[in-house]
Length: 361
Image 1 (cartoon, one colour):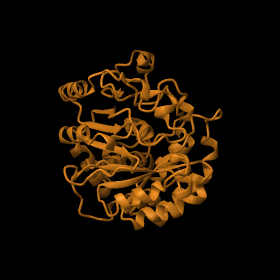
Image 2 (cartoon, one colour; image 1 turned 45 degrees about the vertical axis):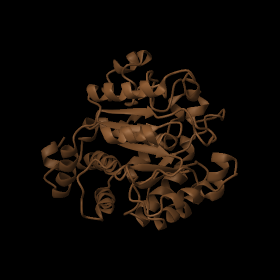
Image 3 (tube, helix red, strand yellow; image 1 turned 30 degrees about the horizontal axis):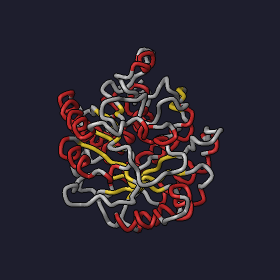
Image 4 (cartoon, helix red, strand yellow; image 1 turned 90 degrees about the horizontal axis):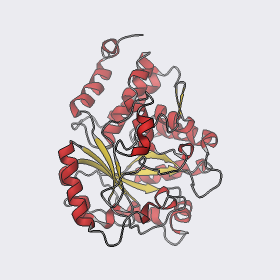
């Protein structure tokens, strides 16, 4: 096994690694900013597992929210992934998170998050397919949500489209990507699993999706925020000989009693992480689940974490280290955690690095 110092003798690898190290380690949480939403998307994990019902209507939520912000700052939290519900419905709370933490927000795009007051906020704007597919999944075809989101975030440097691809809709990928790019935005891929279906493990069906996303990376390297290695990990559920499951998921709430056995099984995990419900008091098992089977989880954030926490697993060769480092770098880049790099081709250089060194992903 070669040493880390050997890999870092490569000037470009050293540059990427140094920028990540300078940004520092993350002590992160996930936070549901509200239990309300202006959509009811088909198969949404939030509603399928009843997370919107956790909040008592009589709760003093604003007081609880302010207490949570203070306690998390005291605990050392430095990064918050804001979800919901729909965060754009509570701009007052969103502003407090933005002013106190490094953060990222996921929004459905229906209500625009204003630029003023949120100038450097990374915004992941949901899209689930072309105009027809997206509307069908997210509001029964009543509105062209994709067009609304495109209009709201045209040429907005804060926003990237968070494209959740359905396993049988690979034929739509290129057209959706081109519209996002022509709108002045980059694209990060997520992967769809409908929890309302009896059969919820579509991982074996993602082969065409994986190949098409890899083609998008080759065709639009400056604009795709998913690496070929990350794309393979999430669609196959494998890092080398390790298979995706609850036993290896690294984003589990560390104060959630039922996770005690997971945290003692020897596999690494984010030791600071908690996933807070919209009551701002209780936590749940992980980012996207309470009791759901992890076989149905293709969530990008969960799989980013799985790779990032497992650095040691990726030190066996230069290629494995590149796989890990480019994943780390892309996550930090997406979330605005790096010092500004004036090289506009930095994303394409990351992709080219994977291609030039590729042996076996």
